Picture 1 (spheres, rainbow, N blue to C red):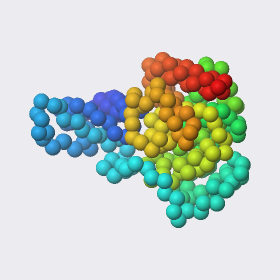
Picture 2 (cartoon, helix red, strand yellow; picture 1 turned 90 degrees about the vertical axis):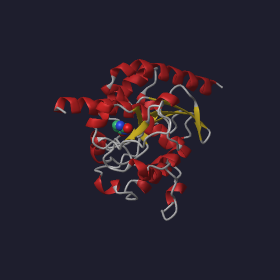
Picture 3 (cartoon, rainbow, N blue to C red; picture 1 turned 90 degrees about the horizontal axis):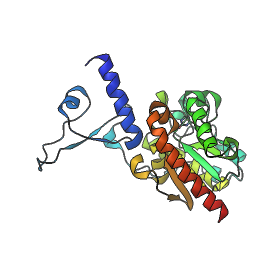
Length: 269
Ligand code: URA
């Protein structure tokens, strides 16, 4: 396979990953089977008329077979952060965290930023390179697009709170692994307890699956209203995915219109 073909394949797989998460299902295709190195051929199916479904591993950093639902693992950790009364207090209690290995590779801990009384909480995946350097969420190109998306529905970035599932950057911006999510998510939950938002918008499949503790595709989740500890939650594309696939902006526009409608209903009820 030429370099160009392999780049095309990688782009196509990234695109699929944005909407399906870590599990990518596809009908088997002999061409793909021949060129994708780490695809295990499926066992011969008992129902030959059905095209077999295979799962492709997209992250190099962990084995897909080991993916399990993140569980909240609190035992053995210092839980005093649970007593924090303000976001500032919480930040100072957790920002030197080394509960997972990312604590040793990060430059800065990215606590999140915004209005501590916000009605709207936006949740992304994890800090990228720019955020790791600056200590603030969504400051790169994806962050600029996020600001524009909010403006399009008449919402100022300063009025919302923006946080991530993970507070530290995974090396090479790889997808967070379930253990990292399970370890870090109590911090986000505490932030939610303190902020008490009326609505949460998850940016991308990792944020939604992390908060809802499930493994669903973006396609299935878009447009639905979920509940997280009594707070309404919706899901749309991650802005970085929109930068890679501008065709999805139209769908994101639909999502954020619905989100705005839900928000207005909630604040006016
Ligand atoms: N992507 C995210 O998910 N979060 C950030 O803070 C930046 C990029």
